[in-house]
Amino acid sequence: MSLPPGCPEATFPAPRALRSLGLLAPLFCAALLAGVAAAADFEEGEAAYQGGDYESALSIFSELAERGELRALRRLVTMYERGLGVSRNEQQVLRYLTRGAGLGASDLQQQLGLRYYYGRSVGQDPATAAEWFTKAAAQGLDEAQYSLAVLYAFGKGVDQDYQEALRWFRDAATQGNAAAQYNLGVFHERAYGVPRDLEEARSWYRRAAEQGLQQARERLLEWDGEAPPGPPAAPELTTTPEPAAPAAPAAPPEAVPAPESRTAAAPTRHPDSIIRRADWVRERPPAHYTLQFISALNENEVLRMITGHTWEREVGYVRLLVQGRIRYNGVYGSFIDQQAARAAISELPPEAAEKKPWPRRFEELQQLLQESTP
Image (cartoon, rainbow, N blue to C red; front, side):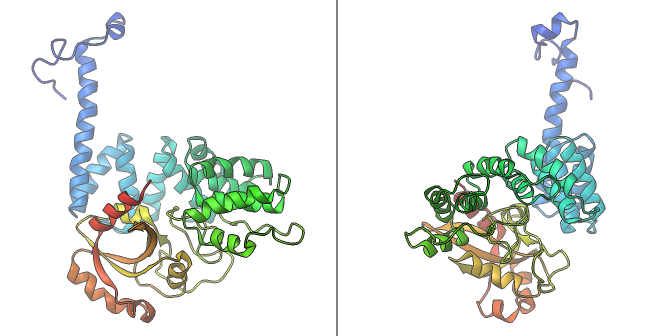
């Protein structure tokens, strides 16, 4: 890159510490401009991506990814995972996830850990999953802290250790992770690694319930203000690091997309049978449309509908704050325009079609998600 006139020394003098090492201002200027150029390149690629010009976006992001640009790596993961402008390619997804995780991106470390845990595009390896969860958890990612806690609670990929599980559940819970809060309640109610403390359990259940976690609400209702009778029983913990619908009672709102249940047979769904969550909605082009087929106050009602049917496209739900109340909105597919979205109503299962689904722009949902985030 050639430097613009006036950049050396006059416009961008090198810091004194650099000058003392004999480094020239033009080198400092070039490095500065390289960073600015990379940012400008990403913005250009992002504009193409948001506008649906995936071919241009792919070219720009691919070049930036070779330079280790994490935002570009994240976009490439999404594009190859969703088939945006390219054929779906799990090996490319794995390649870019591994690159980004190796560069220290905690969200990509978490995603890579989940792939090793479930054996998606790689051999199933809970021990390697635990390594990636640990790296992301150490950076403070609550989803990874929760995932790691589950592995310690059940001895998957690591030695079972209730103290380590408690440690990571607490770290995630203090950041507002509802599933971790619920599981802390279970630990204190069932005396796993701590003395039985029903008031402490109730406190954690209440925090999770205030965030809309249905399982926590039901537990509080069961108590009805009284301590549950009987001695400690078997744990009622979430058993996977990425909680699935009905089979995983502590599925957190807005968690990483949940896979098919590992503990109960599920109906055949879209080949990429992941329940989409908030991140998927945020990553859609704002001008595109989706079909909203249900809006409910009860999270389990939405999950039951999603897991109980066959779907031809991507399906999921988002947790939104609407007029002061938490609602769970089921969404189906991504469409280039409103007409295409309406045409897809015929693809919906009868139960969803009876709900009178309607097209919604992703831009609207993305704005509501932003407003719903504390």
